[in-house]
Amino acid sequence: MAYTTAMFTASRDAPLAELSTRGEVLAELEELRALVLEVCPDCLYQRRPDGAGIFVPPQRQHETRDKNLLTVWAGAGARMRIMPDKEEKYDRSKLATYRERLARLYSELVDGND
Image (tube, helix red, strand yellow):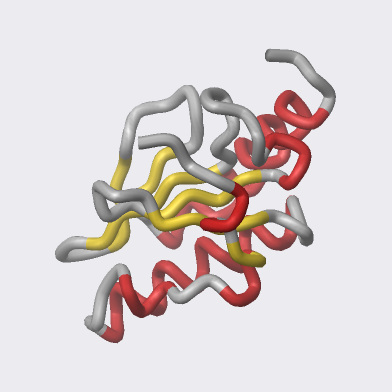
C-alpha cells in the first residue's frame, strides 16, 4: 500500500492509544515519542496497515523507503526499531543509547546520506 501525506499527523498528536490500551505499554510508547521529539521536534507520525507506528522527519515524508526515524509496535511491551538495527524490546535503561542512535539516524536522513 502506498502511503500519502494525508495519513501523517504531527508526532505530538499521534494517537498512540490505538497501538495499545495497556497502561504500561502506553507509558513506554509515550517515552519513545518524547525521545523522537527531542531529536526531531517536527517529526510526523503514521500508523501502518500492519499495526506499527512510524515516526518520520517531514523532509522524508514523500519517500517510499529509507524514511523512518523510529518504528514502534505494541505487544506485551513496546517494541521498536531504529534503522538499520533489528527490532528490539524497549528498555528504559538504554535511553541515552537510543537518543544517540536516533540523533545519528536523523542526521543521516535529513542530510541526504541515503
